[in-house]
Image (tube, rainbow, N blue to C red; front, side, top):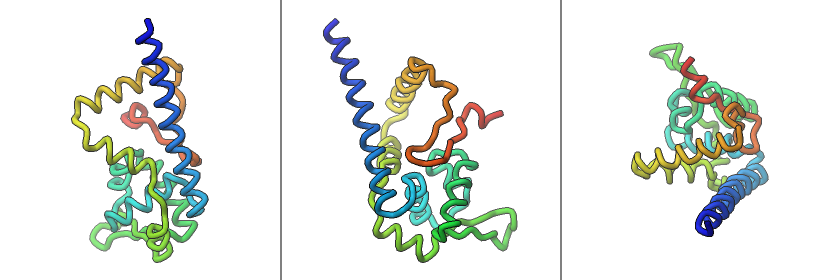
Length: 166
């Protein structure tokens, strides 16, 4: 029974650590840049892949395209990104950073979401499935299956994949 109690304590401590790091880095990003962690992550991803299409950016950020559009709307209002239709196909919109957006990337801190994505991407598929299954179990324990997944310190809500397929 002692092993079980230790494992539960470890789970609580590790959840606390994950929350703390994401929360603290999001607050640091907001304080240093004036934008949320998810907005900063979007800017960093755009800087790496510019020009990028919304669907490609959503894929890179593991977010629903509608969520990314909301993030881009806020970034565009602040003059940090610009969206332009391509000449070849007017339906396709490319996203680029403005000079202000590029300047912000240079002085911006690292984003926890980016660190997490990079760390998960190198794990083998089996390990990822184990982590996903364990987190699903935690969500079920808390009865949070229907809770919309808000992005940390952001007004954005990510559309769950289960709803996305409908």
